[in-house]
Length: 202
Image (cartoon, rainbow, N blue to C red):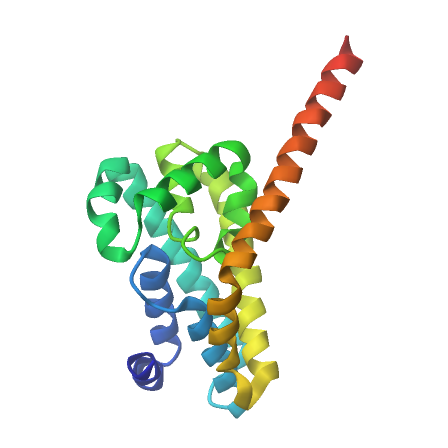
């Protein structure tokens, strides 16, 4: 955290962009903690809320776009070869791949809130030849909501901003389970809706 603090202190908004690009691509940067810390700096008056939000959005959007490009250019073999060095395991790769095939747009929209998945969703989108224009719509919308949520949270918590790290660590598994449950219901509903529509046409 000291290095993050130093980078933001010296580079300001540029530092936020650089850190988030690295974090989204897969470097070991605690993204939620970073965003909440940015919010705390807004609370202290060291950073402007709008400029912080814009910088964070650019960093998240830039990082996930870079991930898409890497996936498009080098494919799954590169991810499997170098992924473990960035804590990207075979299990996480297969999980994200299966989820993306079932509910790609939804994954791109909310993947930022699922630790481990946000680093892989863009790679899977590119590997599955998901159109870049559609990718941008869902991924960038999700990036805005994610950055806005945690920066605002950091600003609201003020001196207690550090509690977010504890909650993210403690409840991340519950969060993953919740989203998986949500995905399952959505997938079953979508499948049922298609059957009803198909039956109506005939």
